[in-house]
Image 1 (cartoon, rainbow, N blue to C red):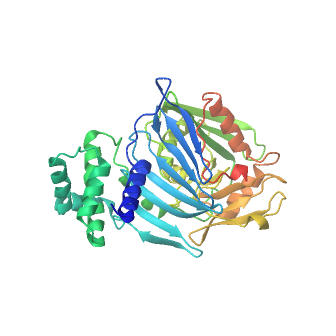
Image 2 (tube, rainbow, N blue to C red):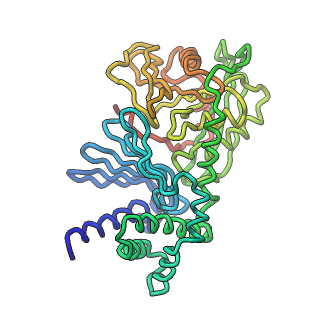
Image 3 (cartoon, rainbow, N blue to C red):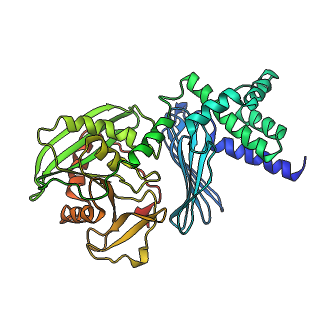
Amino acid sequence: MSSTHLEFKRQIFDQVHLNGPFPKHFYKDNPFYGIEEDISQEHIYRRTYVDGIRHGQNYIIGLDKKHIVASAFSSGFTYGYKLIVKNNKVVEFAVYDCGVQIEWNRVNEKELEVLECLSKGEYEDDFKKWIKTSNVVQKILDTIAEGTDENDYASIHLSLTLASPDPEKQDEMARAEWAYYRQKRMKEGFYHDDFLPYYYLQNEMRDMVIMEDDLPDEIKYIAGVDVAYNDIEQRMVGGIVVLDAQTLEVIDHAIHEMDVVFPYVPGLFSFREVPPVVEAFKKLKVKPDLIVCDAQGIAHPKNVGMATHLGIELDIPTIGCAKRRLVGHYEKEALGNKRGDSQSLIWDNKEVGKALRTQDNTNPMFVSIGHRISLETACEWVLMLSPEYRLPETTRQADQLVNKIMKDRTEIDFLGDEQE
């Protein structure tokens, strides 16, 4: 067997290892909850498990790059985004569905460049097309008929690729294989729902965002929202606290506790967090004029973070004010150490937010437009809401509220800004 062929098999194994189905991981005969790390001279592998299944943030940290693979706990396949970080900047991100890379983008110095999109952006149309018309789907069925286990993803993938050495044929095979496995997983019930419509909805919401001031004449009440989790029990609580915009005194609050009904799919995180917040909002006696979210707004791969989603859902002005970056870069060396100092957060050659120092000599907050507000006004409000602490008072109060209900939280730290 040639070295080239061995390398190819190794690549296939790596792809399946990262993106394919995982067996349950046990510790002392019980499904493992927690973090597992393997450390070598060249890499650090860091994996997160819930109920024995790898999910959430899974890191491969090399000498100069960090790969962040996100897999949904409900299925064992990778769904959502894989981010590649270099020098603390997201340089590539990919969208996965059913363990297959369906979209791949690279951020160069100027803009977001689409290098490859398996489905050319029309996921639903391509899915229907490839499952109905491609002869590669029949090849998959023939391979299974010859004795290969239908669940042996690696063997089917390898046999089809070797049977189609032409690059164009391999491209056809990849699309058909994605369509086949996607349909199969749906029939088996591994999807709580079909994830791809959520990506369509994000694209629709992105076009609905109002990125200028569309505020009431007077901001009398301002709210903070937060969500906390109990991973063991798979429960979540959404909380909303309403403050007097001038005195910052708590005027009203509400919570809503529920089961976790949407898997951990980074990039689609708002579909997991918005429902309990909306239900809590309905219980308020005093409705806010502006909401500050401990989350991203348009500083998101698709420009639709939780703050944006919530603002559109409730048709209320919202601000994203996150402790950590999700995407984008800023000039750290140029960011001053004084309260009010800021630097633009750039993603796809656009300003999507600000790294804003809310107190002297503290880590910045990452402020972005949610909906119906300008970035300048959003930063002004965050500073007014942070008279003593790094976190806005809205976030502090909401955090305290939900932590009275849930002690165990799930935090997202894509770039490790807290440690920088």
